[in-house]
Length: 264
Image 1 (cartoon, rainbow, N blue to C red):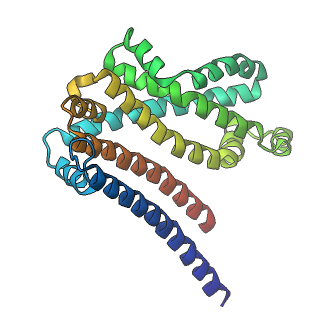
Image 2 (cartoon, rainbow, N blue to C red):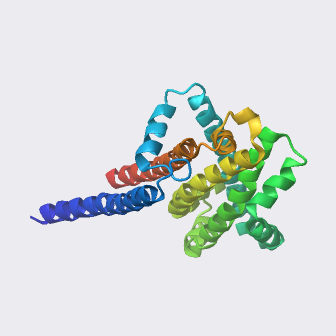
Image 3 (cartoon, rainbow, N blue to C red):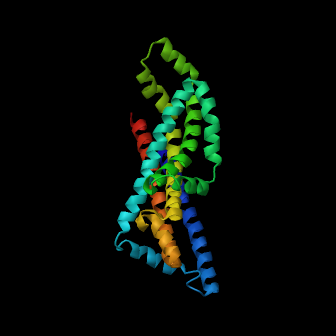
């Protein structure tokens, strides 16, 4: 009986997580459709049906998957570089506090710097392909570093002292104490930062129109130049869809980890 109640609660929670977002999305589409109808100008504000038609036609367009793969590749490169750098520096800073004090102003400056300004500055000095990756890194790194450092700093000191007392190897301390304690932070921060990195990379591609439009940002830039708003919105939706896909992937990995822990 108790298990049945738990299952009912889980079913209700899952249904709520699906139904309410669908209601919100439906309302947004309804407002969009009404606004397009009132405007009555497909060039200025296309209907949702026209945009979705363009969206579904993109899959068969030559170079679609190449453009998507290029932007996703740059995003993953930026993310991995940010993740590894932030985790290593946060771990070292957790043991050596002067390093954290030295990094704090740099992290604060990177976090406060306008994204567009960073893109334009780097574009003047760097190769366009590398520039998009570096921009993504500079935006994602300070967020990851701050989050990782806070998580590492809040690990139970008694556990660390006990590990030292019993002379637990440093590698075992990392794998059996630190990583399990900060795992949720790693997943949650990665989930939020990964989609942000894609957005920043696409913004860099739009502003600089790199790789001759062979990217999501390049396609958006080209559509804006030809004033094809339905095509532009379709490519924007592609960026949103893949952003959600990246977030879902991280969330799924976190769920798999939780299930594996419960089964032990």
